[in-house]
Amino acid sequence: MTRSDTIRSDRQADRARRRFIAASGAFGGALALGVVPDAHAQAVGYQTLPSALPTRDPSSIEVLEFFWFGCPHCYRFEPTINAWAAQRPDDTSFVREAPPFNPGWENHSRTFYAAEALGITDGMFDQMFHEIHEKRQAMRSPDAVGKLVESLDLGVDAETFEKAMVSFSVETGMRRGLQLARDAKISGVPALLINGKYTTSASLAGGNEGMIRVVNRLIEQERDAA
Image (tube, rainbow, N blue to C red; front, side, top):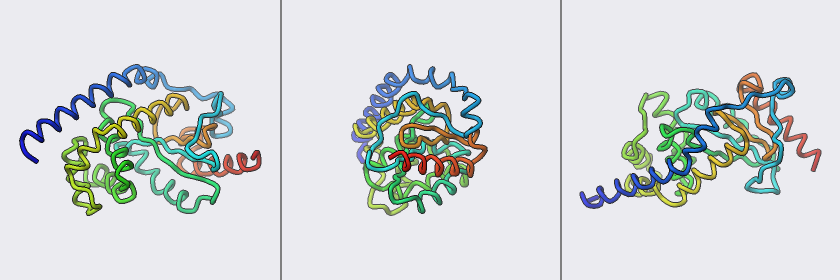
């Protein structure tokens, strides 16, 4: 990459960052308020949304995880949700969203959505968590993330990945994640949205394994209702 290319890339990233912060600024205040679960939600381990949200594939029962690469609770939850996802029922889909709840999360969110856009999520997802939580690397700069992706031999070089981080598809993905989190009344991560109707978290379900028990129960409930 030449110096002029670098300057141009930096300017593009800066413009994208300003656009994103401007678009999501009002959302941050809503998240800061949090959501206080009622007694029924505490008793059953989940909350029911006032109205169902659309899912990506209406023909399946969708389980959606909201997460952040920098979150230690998410890091500890990943082995549990990954094991469940590997053995989930055939009529169930599993997807993720990485909404940047505050500006400090932004480049981690861009990393996830860029990997999705380039089709390399499976190859870099666990390694990103490992770099942050085991090797104590912040991984907040596009340069650091680009170098990591290139080192993983996924067929994507650093320059390509960094450009993807400020692409239109990534901007769209972040806005979608933020909107879903707002509509689902998510105030922290990790959190799960089941079939667009119910949300659960470790605090509601009594831990990571409790979240899986709640998910399985709600899947059965949705299947019976269908």
